[in-house]
Length: 278
Ligand code: KIV
Ligand code: NA
Image (tube, rainbow, N blue to C red; front, top):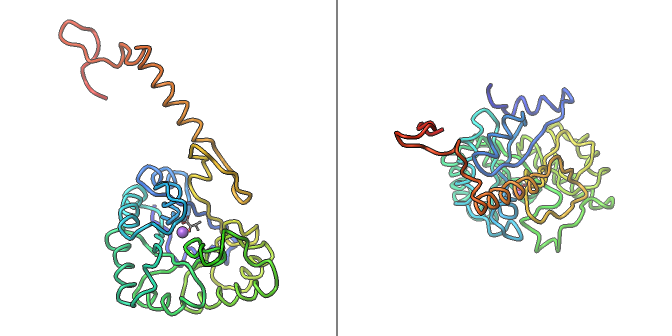
């Protein structure tokens, strides 16, 4: 099976086939996402929150993104992989921006990059696309600007704000973005943007009218010790509980000396157990 490409992803919009995207951050999560049949894997800078334990995406570095993207690429060789450009890595000189894009593609083995912002970064998007790198846009709530926005608030709540989002979406389309993520946007605003654009919209907390959906791996699976409910998320499994139960049972059996049992033991010449590992 070949990974999708941007032509096929864009055709999905026209065929009205919903696009499924999930984040992944390492080799096993990427393998499992690919085996489950996801269309696109996003190595999101949500890495900072869900894997590295920061309380925002701002501390995430290029080095973090390259390291994690590369391990995802090894786990999902047949899936289209998008990597986030982290905080402030695409706001300096064009050379600096393209150098960072190059690292995600060449060392991270991504197929495309994502950056946050609308009309104000359209020129940057255009230059990256001209270099031959597909760009996924990202508007609405843009977590790298949380300090500027003043919190994680819903976007597109009135006509004026919806008009701003529409201008941003069109600027990204014009600049050559192959699709746009809409994060925490009202369903009405997301619907009108999805209809106005010829490129796909991929929503998170943006309602039912988007051309695709994206969620964070650890949210889908409840893969964390202290899960905070989010209205826009559905938990499809409770991996956190499974992991906690599994490890506590292991600890208990070690304490009781019931693990290892006879079947886990390599015996010498006088024993009866097998001696081949695995
Ligand atoms: O980093 C991330 O996970 C993202 C998605 C929420 C779109 O950017
Ligand atoms: Na992100």
